[in-house]
Length: 249
Image 1: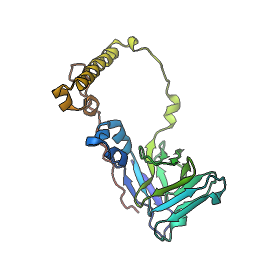
Image 2: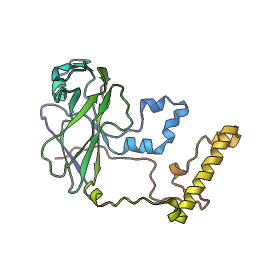
Image 3: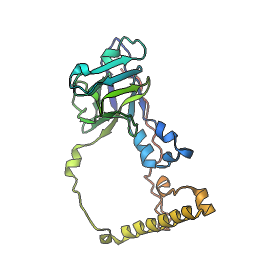
């Protein structure tokens, strides 16, 4: 399985491409880095590759609908700045170029988005699904201002996040709504979780020393079903280790 990344400008180095990193500034600010205990957050942060800003810059939107209503200023002079970021679509949309044409294997598309759980005030990343198993030209990464004002992008800050998906089979998925009572075994597992969760929260509220010491329940992090069976899910993953890019011919 390969993801091929062809650089589009032979005269300059493309933006750096790295495996997704779990760290987020707002998560670091929690006491005891509590937010990292939410495994779905960190798994989302690392299930793909980040494309990093080759330079720092400030973008400012005055609220107008013209291309000229967005002002882009590099923090330091850079010869490739205006090839990297521009006001192309107007209406408060800022466009950034990845520097690559991507090619995936048959049946695989690319989900293009902002870095998961990477919060920026005043601007929102737009998302796209691209059929990179046949597309011979690049796409852009776009951000939409949510209000007039300025935002900063720092050098080496991720501006784009890519991951792969087999999207065609989704059309064959039949969504079924059911009552939990229709599956007694599954209902039993759910009820066991509710009991554990309720008792744990009561222990936290009472200040029970053992519960406070435990700090959080680890059933999902460990891939365990809390029904007393000590069942562990062998396919469970609690850390993503994607491969970094390597040079090819």
